[in-house]
Image (tube, rainbow, N blue to C red):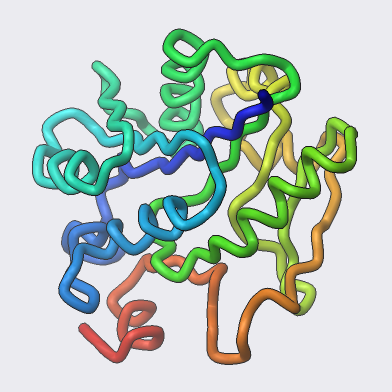
Length: 205
């Protein structure tokens, strides 16, 4: 049975936010819980969250939420390194096959849409094509991005200065329209990088 693996890189230092943004309270729960719960409402099979060593508070929240926690021995220097750590975990522990797929979205996306996730998964398994799928709303690309497992090796081979966007933009990718899945006041592609982002979206600081 084909499977899907969600990867949430959560090993950053929240430099622009000035505090651990993934733990900021939002309607009574840490921000990252909202992102995790969106994935859990979708039909994705496995959810892996990568946390840097020593970030015990975040690790506790991730485990309490029921996601799989991956803590690399060396702190990931960037998002690509976190994704690579999650891919190694999947490769060694879950034995993926070529027809499987993995999806990637930052952990700081509390408005992430389960409906968008499910559309990407449905398109992947119904098309029979090995295409990278990118959701689009009102002409704007967003997350998550779905990548057929056969491209996992390409992620490991990326040069030091290159990010995942090199693969997404350079290989066979398809844009998947998702306008009909969201309401006008929903912002499923919104990520939280600064206090101003948080205030604008949620009226909190």
